[in-house]
Structures are given as structure tokens and as C-alpha cells.
Image 1 (tube, rainbow, N blue to C red):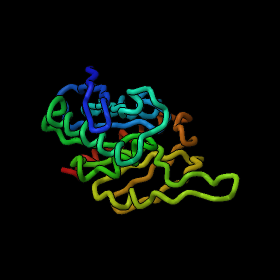
Image 2: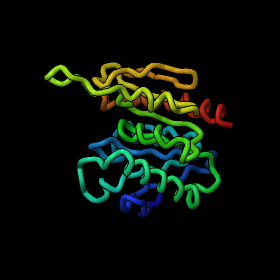
Image 3: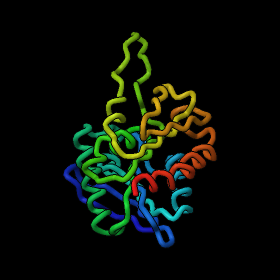
Length: 207
């Protein structure tokens, strides 16, 4: 296991790289808006991936590394993410096929940058489809277009009671409903099982 400091256009990011034995692919995961890479669902996905022979890199965006709680604008997040993935592909991940993803905000970043990163597939944990309705009755726009733009295999692991909604399945998009809400803490075994089932299929489709 190694922790790397990676320079990006938005400042220094951090990547915790965990090597699988004789890896056949790599999974690069980002965190949610207000949390870090220690989130239980990210850790569950990491354990399953490593057991399947897939190395994992857990990435902290520059705003987190700098100690800020509020996320940077989307363009800055995307640029930093692309820089990190490029660095990892040129170094510790080598020529391995790379899958990207993350939880909530991190999942959105991975979807928006899939073409730029050359990701073979995308793993979305708790994709925030639409912000919950405010007390005033207004509701933010849907982010379905970010999912629809992805042309590689996608897995969305979503809590059945997630206030951000349930994304629809699609041609290459699988949705695994698990007990719980947006945190995905209720049944981590179900989260891990969904990821474990999808990974070999995703790699097969990508190959």
C-alpha cells in the first residue's frame, strides 16, 4: 500500500494505492462531497475488488487534502480527477485496464470524465440523481444526463430509501437496489455482493 501526493490543476490530490496480487485491472474511486475515502461503502468495494485481483486507488480531491469541507466547482473536480487518473496510469497502475467510480459526488465526477480518463467501466455508489425537495417545494435538476452520456458498463449501487432517488437501469447500466439510504451503511454485505457480481461482467464487456 502506498499513498501518493499528485499535483493537479486544482492543487495537490492524494491517492492511496492498494495492489492486488497479480492484478488484472485497477479500480480508481473518489469520495463524496462531505466525506473521505474511509466511507464504509468505498471500503467495502475496495475489499471486494482486491479479492477479485483488482488493484484499487482511493483518491482524495485537492479541496479535501487542503482541509476544506466544501467541494470545488465541477470543472475543477473533473480536471483534478483526470490529472490523477493519468498520473496513476503512467505510474503504479501501468498498463492495467482501469475502471473508475466513487460515491455520490465522486460517482458524478467519474461519469463526466469517463471519455477523458479512458475508463473501461464506471462504479457508482449512491449516485445523487436529484437533490431532495426543499422546504420551499423547489427541487434541483435531474443528473440523469450524466449517466446517459456514459457508453461503457456502469453499476449503480443505490439504497432503496435514498432521498436522492433511484436511477433507472439502461442498456449498459445495471442498478443494484440495496437496503438503506444515501450512506449505504445499512447492509455493506449487499453492497459488496453487488460489486463482486458486477466486476467480472464489466471487465468481460470492456474486453
